[in-house]
Image 1: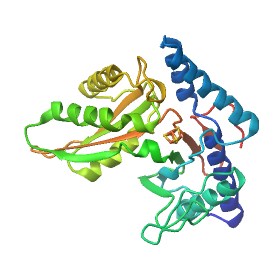
Image 2: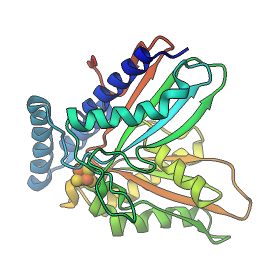
Image 3: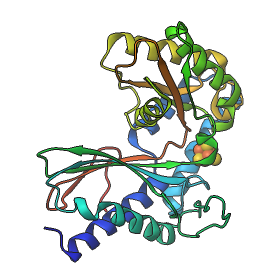
Image 4: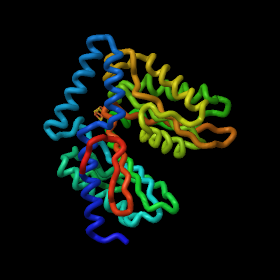
Length: 299
Ligand code: SF4
């Protein structure tokens, strides 16, 4: 049974975790950026990567967000039905965002649609976004945090392909998006692709794909092959770091899929930028936590 002190404790831990993810990139993103820096030859590409790493160092040293756009907060929650704070979770996450906004601090990124005013707290109608996966018989709670910046959100797109377009249609859809909007999203990009029946199922999967670690693959062999083909294809565009040209355009391509209607393929793309601020934390029923995305963190 939740009590007010455990709600307060989890709110505080989540506020600190959000603040940490704003200032330090996850381990897999840092490792991939280091790899890409070592593989680029052009002085411009190398200088941009050096600047990105300098930026990261200074963000930690000066205790400031690593990018000025700290995004709209989004959470993917995989919560056990027996997790003691399940009933309080959505309210608690909203409070944690407000706390992090002032303590981190985070940029004020929640504008009430149609009323056109900034709430100044990073919360508003429906924000932060919380997606739920309910896990039966579990007393744990896994939370993915994500900061959806303006630039990296821009290439997002979903559609249902005409019957007969097939997997070639999926590849064309993704590459069309990357050649037209990829540049705007601060490459190298993590490209999430959802393949399902309708726009909403594909769109949610494309965002879920961005929660997967860089270097992981879809368990289906053919989907994994498509991840590789898309990665090679998008790299061949030559966006390079910050779109200024280079041999590599992506941190990776992650595809998530479900079964689908026989005559329809819904496809969606979502993009994470080089500053891919994704965090992953797992709580047990006593609020002991494990952080898998960032090493050496104590909240
Ligand atoms: S795309 Fe990413 S790195 Fe570029 S400004 Fe937006 S949040 Fe920052």
